[in-house]
Length: 261
Image 1 (cartoon, one colour):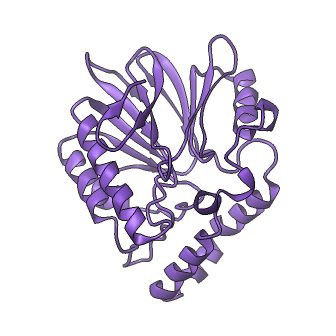
Image 2 (tube, rainbow, N blue to C red; image 1 turned 180 degrees about the horizontal axis):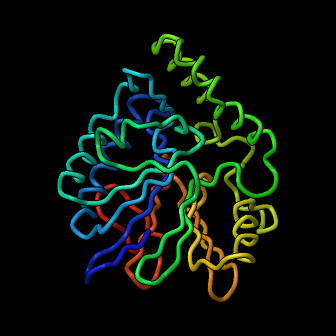
């Protein structure tokens, strides 16, 4: 994929909205904030990459999708109608996205990291779950959740029951409870995505590695030419990535005006 930016255009990257958690009221307020942010950036947006865990749970039945998120879905539909390219990546909470966004909204969905070139800068972009060393328990769970037979069996559970079970499971997630201080920075040697990027950089060069999942905004140089960025999350912090054609920046949105500091 190649993207060329005109003057004043920018490419945006955002992840881990976790819409639906921890409850309907908090999620609705966060959704409204997201829609305001999208409204502020759309005039300059050459493309927007939604880098996984946009929904705290998403499962596409043959004829049913999860209830809610109407404001967000309406906003991205309007943006696509304006011709703004949007791209979705699945995360560990919404890895069961299939063809709804592709067929209904003309938004491609990626299940693996994607390499691209933007104004001659090389990017590797993905959610990041299950990459790098460690996290063996989750990697086993992901194989189970990604198994087509398991997905086929789950879809035969009535949506009211299946989605309720998923939300009950989600209440134990680290984004809802900040479990075991997992969102603290514990050194580069313990940052699995950083280690993953180091390994990739030994084989193939990218200027920017952009991932989510970690729930911690990070800007970590890999060497003098490559940098790993993590996009943080929107339940508490509201960070996003912005590329202006020359430099990649992490920005924070306070809900009413973009903070460029």
